[in-house]
Length: 330
Image 1: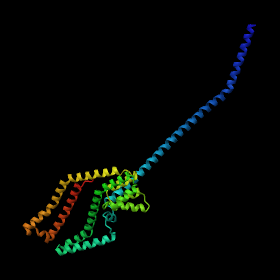
Image 2 (image 1 turned 30 degrees about the horizontal axis):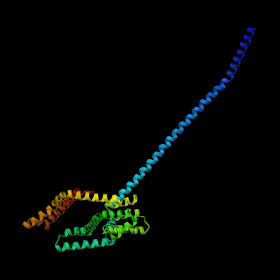
Image 3 (image 1 turned 120 degrees about the horizontal axis):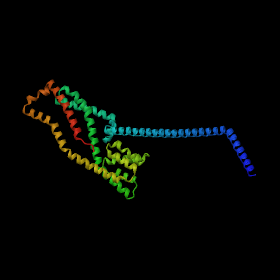
Image 4 (image 1 turned 90 degrees about the vertical axis):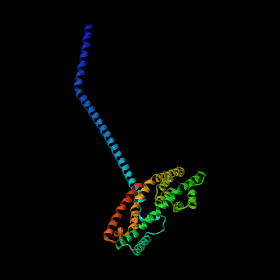
């Protein structure tokens, strides 16, 4: 009985194993296809992920490049604006120079005055007895050199007077703001009570406000009529914060002290340059007083005139070089 049961169980097991083998044989191909499809799907998903990563990295690189190019363009534009502003500050057009000198003269009338000055100086040189070869030079110098030198002299003198009084005006504005007055009232106080040329510059700010400009915009225009860094500092400070004038006044006073110190240290070099520049004229005068006949050929002969012209050119170059060497920007 037990042997029969064992035979039946073995038969059943073998039948089940055979059925499983037959089923596996039939299903093996479909299972293998499913595994291949799964592997192919994983490969596709991995490639798609890699492409997304590469695309995201490429987009980030392009965005960074665009941002870098935008920053470079902005910096270049700011640099060009700063160069233009510096160029206009150092050597502005004649119309702006006349305005910065505080002269109420149109450019056309200035040219007329320049021509009159050249003619008058030429007539004076002719009356004194200057050689005819020097008269064209006197005319050119009187028409172009002397009027422009006068404008530059007035311009530098006006800037110096402005810098002497500007820190005091800023102190008054700061005290007015700290006492509770609006910044506009402090500027109006300077525009009515301060000495020239500070009074005129702040009056322009008040007039610009009446035309609709804000205080920062009007203050930024001060550099157009007052060619000095301090005027630009004032406009920038007013744009940043309306109550920063105390710090600015301290900076301006420190700059003034530094300029005075530099001027004191450079006085020896300036004195030496003045002595060297005046030495040829002093020697010529002494030779003329002691031996007139020895030096007069320079003034009465064509060769002497040529020697004087060449010497004047070389002396002008030397004086220009010395001036560049002893002038320091602070």
